[in-house]
Image (cartoon, rainbow, N blue to C red):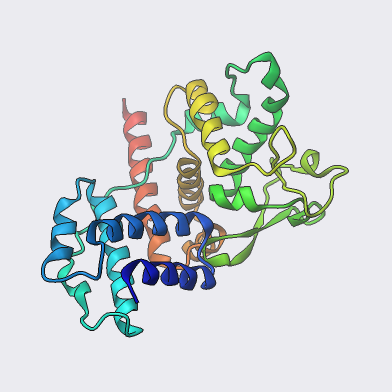
Length: 279
């Protein structure tokens, strides 16, 4: 089997394991670039030359090399390649940095109703966009999870939302008293998307990025992304003493180690608050 065919088979394998569409897109991009560089199964130091040719940030390099290694380990285990060439690749250490979060003033501004420039044609989207931002802030959901949520996933009586996270793992997220999605579901069918585009179609990740880049960030005066709100939500829970295991479940992390980074972030925020009080 040639390299390109093995890449296609590997993508099918990962799709069958329940990898999200966004993760599959990233995987296809990395392995597509790799297969174009190599053109055939690697010989000699070809993989090392591919790694040396990369001009990307260390975090991106870490992800690309891990992806390539996983593919070649799979190919070797399934007999598509004789030698385990993955050993040629050196996975660089990921730089240790804490996630970016918004400060309390910025979060308060978003909660109280941010103002941004909408054309007269787009005024009907203001309420939707504000509720979208509020949902990110008060649930810590991922962008893809909100995109995939349907009307029938919202349990109004018990104030909770069923979402499908990474690896197609379902979880139920409680909704705080300050967040109501009732206006989104009134008179609509269970299979319809919870958040819609103007034409009634499902709101996609690119549309959400547009809202945050062109509407939310200018209104707050700093860059804001859905994942920053997820980080802010997790840090808020840590600061208020919510057990780390509960936060792991709320965020849908498969590993506790991923969640524990917020403990350090919460301490950093608390130190900054104390320093500001001392001024």
